[in-house]
Length: 306
Ligand code: RIB
Image 1: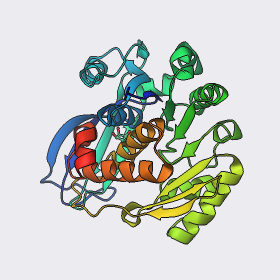
Image 2: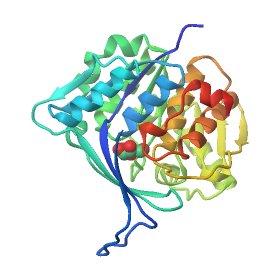
Image 3: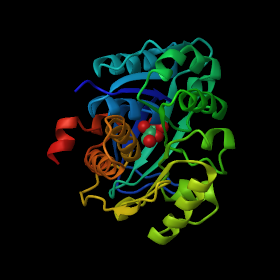
């Protein structure tokens, strides 16, 4: 079977991580943590997750003309990702995220977007041929909304499956020009609450939020509920919960990205939504067992063995 063609439009960061027993409160200093750097950024994580899960991936992104940008691109090349549409920005530095992770694997993240914030609709148009010919397009919200909108419109118009991971949480409902061009939306509880105005805490509130997302124009809504699993609703009538996998969490960073990348590959391969969600759930569960974003992303073999 040939690999499905996946285009990811999104952010690339370098993550500076401290893992310590707990996340400090504002104004507080705590000592005793372990420091690491790792490649990250929601778009880049999803691109790497899709490549390791078996996708033929092209990544559309913007990095600075600096050492961190060069290192990130070299990393994508090692993953076999097509980097021909990664633009090098002379004005802005590469994106950087400061991440604190506690003993339970929960994190707190602050991102200086830098060049990610300059990824433009014109950059997307530059990658139009690849987007039109893809099996799936994957987007998130760590780049400007007008850029996301250009990408999803182009893909949808050309019959390409569009997967939106609406992270970081948008803070408000999304423009209709984005939402109506999305095939599959995959928010977590917080993101689903902000997108719909319905506070999502459990299966029944997730079900109500999913109905609202369907009414807004998406074909499939997958609301992830952490340890409680994923609620899936499709326009053609599926309503189901898929359980999550119990694992010992070291670092939850990029679990959602692992999920989205693997989901894109499975759906682009033509698997059913329930099979694809199970594949994605395994990829996410594997990712939380290691520290760092991209170092934690599983290969297809690891996902299938899990
Ligand atoms: O989703 C995890 C990612 O969020 C991190 O890699 C960090 O760079 C931020 O973009």
